[in-house]
Image: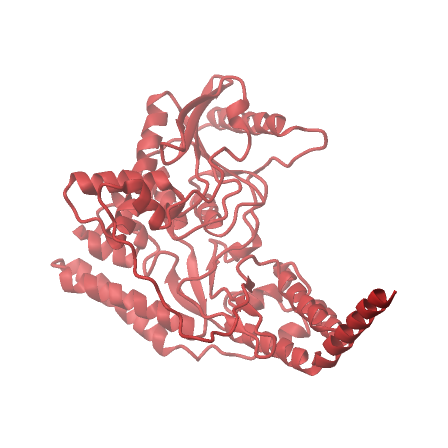
Length: 492
């Protein structure tokens, strides 16, 4: 009995102590700080505050203020602020792990030496690891007549063929849009560098693996064509995103000009860092160029980014209205956003071997880095996507759809859009030390809409009650072959 009484008294004491240490006013100040910094730095804020944004920001603000005001302890107050961030439904706007206060200076270990004779260990040390499911997002492998050409384990990508209604479809899986998620790309690049007698360093491997990712994709596309595929299905379902390869990759699937999305950045210090990076790359290309046309184009690009650097701070209109009302979205309104060219740089896109200077072309449009693989496929193409396709996968889907390279099949994508064009410092709340990352960019589609709204399929294939995943996979193939048949009957 005495032990039980001691435990109860201990619990009561700790509860009273926690309540006594709870500082509601400090949490309210944290919430005020969070809103102020979102106004300063969140690229999607004005869009989220419009009817197109899909949320009611004034209601979200009122609910959060009430939740913080009624919180009884730190846990409840923290949960209120976390619910506020979750209410934006933007995967790039999210909490970062809590960092304890450092009591001693951190010690960074030296980087391990890369042994040219140990590629598996080396690729692992460089962080190459599969971060997405190699299997197709729908179980196409389990359907009758499916032939697996490449398994996505020893090969970079999974690929296969299946024939329906007399049409052989080649199917290619892209589970992430970053080379580091593909160990096979690292191993292939490692072998290539070693065979060529080139140095194997973290930088050389990063460049080689990135290029090899595209090289392997082009090779697998050719393999599918050689096995008889006359139409291609690219599966990006359950693809969480990646990097700029989402903008580069569409060029592999057409020999026509491709335009990248317009890029906007929050009118804040992150934009200055991005512009500085662009100017550095342009200056390096200018120093190496011998082409008059290339130098003229690079000079124009440098002038643009220099002007935009000087314009930082000129678009900082009052956005405090977002917590009180909804207003119509337009990219021409004052949204605290700066034009930053296009997703791939200054140029919307360049043709293969434009300007006769590959380094200059890549500095103007980063997709030109892989121009040797442009047009690897030129036939009909469909992109299979779902609500778990995010970020760079959405960039890929939007560019494919907006440039009429492919039709999108499946479900609306998840709606993350653009995330970060340069390293961004997190918001750190002064009292609680909660940390949040904040997207600093926006990609605008051909009609001026924000990619963050998700990419709507041309052909919807939603799950239905009682339908297995195998049945839905078969239905997806049916709608694709029916669409192909319909296209073939149309007069040219």
